[in-house]
Length: 168
Image (cartoon, rainbow, N blue to C red; front, side, top):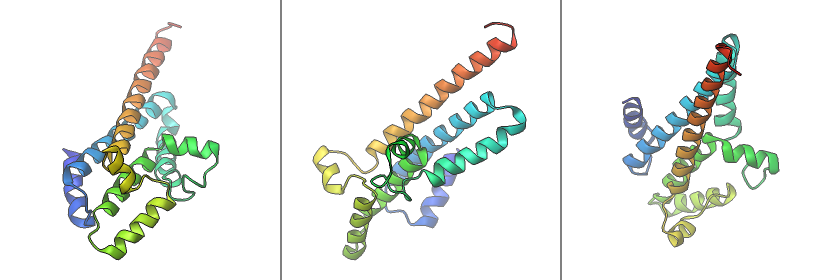
């Protein structure tokens, strides 16, 4: 329900050019990733540090590792790995690519193509040749990241519960 309300507000205020269903699915995937990360942190980090660590990691993953500066093409091998694992990067790619691909004005569409090339995202032509939309890969990656974080959280809680009760 939260994702639906946020999507309605965002969609109406941001004038996003993509379909509403794609935006809703993107926000659900981002919520899955963020809450999965929060679960892992809450389980593995001492309670006194959990809020700080969660805030720093979420800001880092959304801000520093969103693929804007440095871009994916400019990043070194370690940074590329961080960008591949950052849900902020995939969410940004989906939002921007879908928005740029639906711009009716030719001038802004050309600027969008230049930004897509600068950020090393697939172009509309590449996606069309593969039969995919601008959000197909990002939504799949976000879902996989969210599920992986949930599984990691289950493993961590199982380990934490086992060590609390004297089991190895």
